[in-house]
Image (cartoon, rainbow, N blue to C red; front, side, top):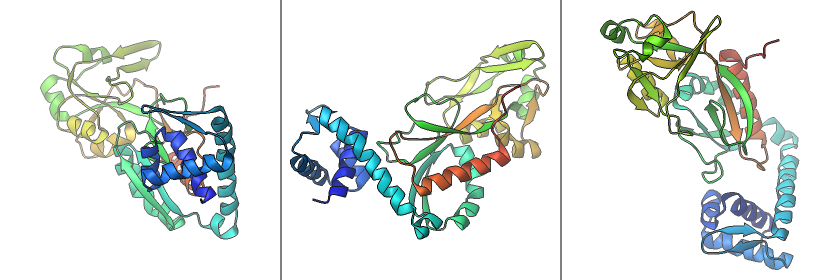
Length: 307
């Protein structure tokens, strides 16, 4: 039995709650993972897991052992990355998941800079707006806009995206130009709704001007769950959009979108980078986080709190 492989298999089974899922993330067979856990229990002379046909539970000994093993594996990784060659050149595969507009408009155009700095890091980038189970899908980190609903994740606030209201000239010619946010509730006006994965519901608009605050729900003519599709629907004239400004800047420059209510403000959308709890931050993940922070500092820095 390779004790390192056995400890890795044990921690992954605990984190995923399944021998099958653990085997998939480790690129091993389920039988191999099962055998490693059995050999580990035999060596330690304790039962680490209570197994039933429906679920796995840690025993008291298993819970204590898990906490020690997580720290031990992290220390081993630190020992390796502290070597001059490893510290100077982080390497390996990094699995990330990011929203589709952020990937298309900001991250991917900037990736040549990251690759030039860290040529030995291979990035596997999932591009989606869906909810991602970081442990089950063996994802190192996700970047997401909006407040995080899973409070168990470790997260870093990496940016704040200024927001605006936009519409296509063709739509405004057809429906009329709204002069006040409340006009979006009128029967002739339509919005394009964005379906947030974590709530399954579209968001309302909250807008401020001087001492006036208006919350607008609007009448969705179309609701989508992908940022690129959302932008495309607005450009096509389907309705009014609430967009991070970085998504709209090119379309406005081309005359495809017009900004509305420029003298009104909305709260910026916070942007977070999140990774699983009890997962050691490797050298490759650490440099990726630092790179994302630097990139967003140029495009949408974290807003300073009011004095």
